[in-house]
Image (cartoon, rainbow, N blue to C red; front, top):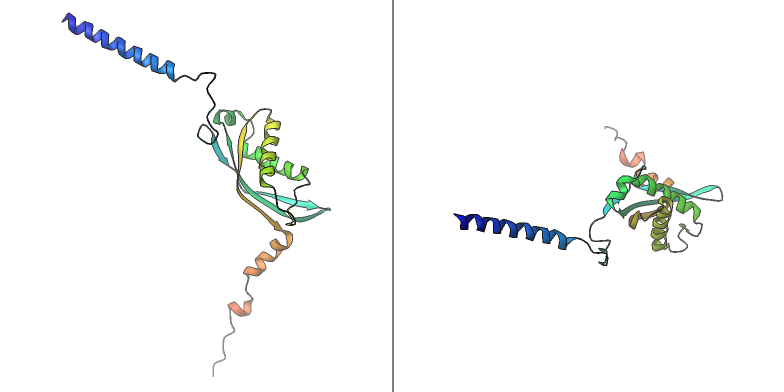
Length: 170
């Protein structure tokens, strides 16, 4: 009976020691490299479609349309007093209006990396810390004012083609 009690105590002590060691060994050390940004630990937040009118010489030339996805740490996102998609939408507007080098009229290619990095840096500067790790582009379009005006006309068929006149009965 004594052997049974001693062996139970020995097994319990060995189990507690192994669990304690496992928790101590799994703790992060200060010299460990941080996990890469694309492999977990971050939330991916998708914005609604952002439509920004492009104004040149006091007239609307067209509309910049984008849908973005950004990555951030969930704990920091929860601490924000403003919803993160609203913050990024505001920064996209601010960035597009404050960067006259971006030309969407199709005469020069758009530097999408400069756009993504600029929006990310603007948001992080506004918040005062590294909130947004990466800005990913899901959709970017530019529609001129003429393309938007003519779009419904291209879909609409004349009434004579859709409802032919009834033929006269003999």
